[in-house]
Length: 309
Image 1 (cartoon, rainbow, N blue to C red):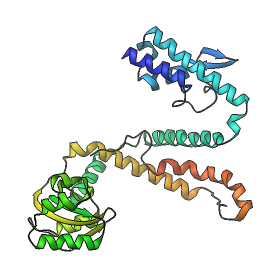
Image 2 (tube, rainbow, N blue to C red; image 1 turned 180 degrees about the vertical axis):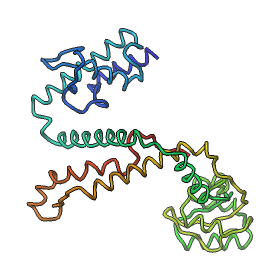
Image 3 (cartoon, helix red, strand yellow; image 1 turned 45 degrees about the horizontal axis):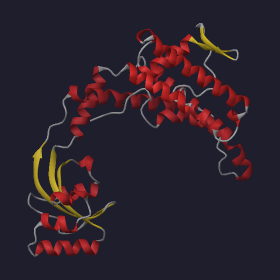
Image 4 (cartoon, one colour; image 1 turned 135 degrees about the vertical axis):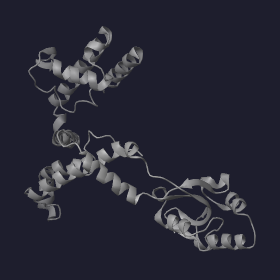
């Protein structure tokens, strides 16, 4: 592990990217902690160094060997020298760089706001169980074992149906005519649930009895399908404990979105995007206030990991 971390540090230094993932600004943030290094009069604080070490290694500096601690500090010094030179040449104000820095600011502040707002708003047991009950009510009760033949056009799909009507085997036709990778298995898709396939496809499957195939081809964004239902079986929803983490994340998303929606309702926002050349010139300045609250509202608070089934 130590050698891998050292190798990663060396690679980051060689690429000039040592600080890219952790610090978008040109210099370390000011804090009251002592400096661990100074670059052209600009201190690199111990607080910033500790944050960098933890973000890269997941450990505190005290848990790392001295050579690793020194290499990480070298990385920060290297990054600071590069950043200072970029600012000296005015690159922080040219090209796309100002917009990248501003976008980073919006994202970081959005994450900070999400963490701060949700810190004392953990879902209650009542909220968790109410959300779980809603999940159980909406969860599919049956899953389907299906096959399909996927072709590019409706006329060709109709010809495939005619061949099935004349007695050709579904699996053989899938291997010969389907353009889906499942053709190698005779079109077998295994067990599927409604959330896993396009709604048109699911509707056709659910209308069949085991052993039947769709006499009318089904169109989805992927093409035209002839669907066969092999069998069905009942499924049980996840238990409360299995679902609990995801429910917590969903409730936090909802709470934070409601909070941001209220901020958007009370914010004074002016949009000039479609008011001609003069309005277009003013658009970047007008866009910033709108983007600040909107960024974290489109997904979970950045500190919340993506939900998993």
